[in-house]
Amino acid sequence: KKEKKRKKEEERMFLAHLNRGWRASTMLRQRMDVRKRETFARSLSSSLRTRENLRNVAIIAHVDHGKTSLVDCMLKQSQSGLADLDMGSRVMDSNKLEQERGITILSKCASILLDSKETEVSSSSSSSSSSSVRVNLIDTPGHADFGGEVERIMNMVDGVCLVVDATEGPMSQTKFVLMKALAQGLRPIVVINKCDRETARLGEVENEVFDMFDAVGANDEQLDFPIVYASAKMGWATLEEPEGSVETDDCDMRPLFDTILNHVPPPMVDDVTPFSMLVTQTQANSFLGKELIGRIQTGSVSVGDLCHFISPDGNSISEDAKVTKISQWQGIVQTDIERASSGDVVAIAGFPRAGVNDTLATTSVKEAVQCVPIDPPVLSIIVTSNSASPLSGMDGDKCTFPIIMERLEAEIETNVSLTLTKIGSEQVQLHGRGELQLGILLEQMRREGFELACSSPQAVLKQDENNPESMLEPVEELVIDCHNDHAGQVIEKMAKRKADLV
Image 1 (cartoon, one colour):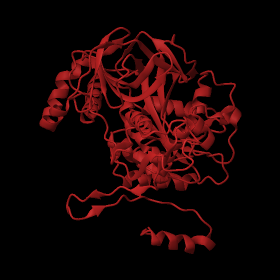
Image 2 (tube, one colour):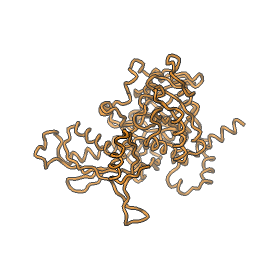
Image 3 (cartoon, one colour):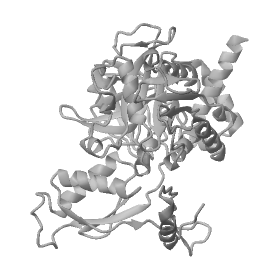
């Protein structure tokens, strides 16, 4: 009975991956109905196995609910070389703009090792025992403007930790990231953070989270989510609702580690099919150039293997090139390895022209791996050179439009939530997800020595498919906390912007 139950669970997990588009080509998914997919899955079950020593988990939440602090705490208690750092160091926010503004802008990877038998945290070293489980952690942004960073990493993980503030409860971005996780068939772990605060309202927040799951259409399995009560600042977690103060000397993050090992399924891997990997992120390496980051979907790859990359639509295939480097995360540090296999999250060098959403694969593979669709942009600005200003050239040394255009084109190769539309010989329209995202890009360019002019942001309109004569405008959910004395003025100003009070 146990063996039959295990095979049935493996088949169910594979069907979930298959429906998410990780194994089959686009043409195959379009032509095969549910019954044919089940038959196809059974025929391939012999080449599939579960990697019990691996978990891939993303940390998602609304802005300022404690994602990065939670990852820091997990890294410290896993002895990943951060034990001497302060609790509030936020080592995952390595970008200067992230440190200055106190927010996460880019998704980042890290890893810890857990003991699967005693569920104790072990050192994150390459020479781990057979009972150790590697947990790849992906820290994501919490601001809605950087939601594209959350969307594109969903195909790298098999589970998510949804962090919710114990005082504020679920917010607008909490709902957004939850919808993206549920759409991929993931079963979240709810972590109610900041439980050490006197203003924490644990029972109410727990009910609000359940109502949010139900409102966004979670199935029965997803509604049966585990809850972990935690304080990333104090470094403890518990499965029971804490009453009063918690003695931090006797508590640690072990209950959260237990929940991850027991609730997040190990990845279903295919070692027989040739190597393929969807590029989710890129990063610059001062010695090797561009590194491609992603999760290996099928097969394995070694340093020196011949590979090529395929465009997202599958129409363009590059020339063959050798893999020059493969690296894996040990804590927050990348360590070189000689070989990686299906399910691993790695960085691969040797393909400077490949970009995000391209498929890196061995030379026998000719079809692209389907990528997760990204929500369209909602705001746009017009960018041009600052040649019309009498102060042109006084703030930067990169002032001409071709140089500005080249920088913007390089940005959209790595940031899939941005798009460009050229509207003239000296103007380009830049589309993004919000004012903060566009502002961060402009500030980064200013620090790099660029000088440019831009217009005020405008909402992106699109044509209604049901009524071609009408245009649709993006809608945003807004939560405003204010004193009762100012509520009337706030409502009045929002009414002028055609807001509906809900």
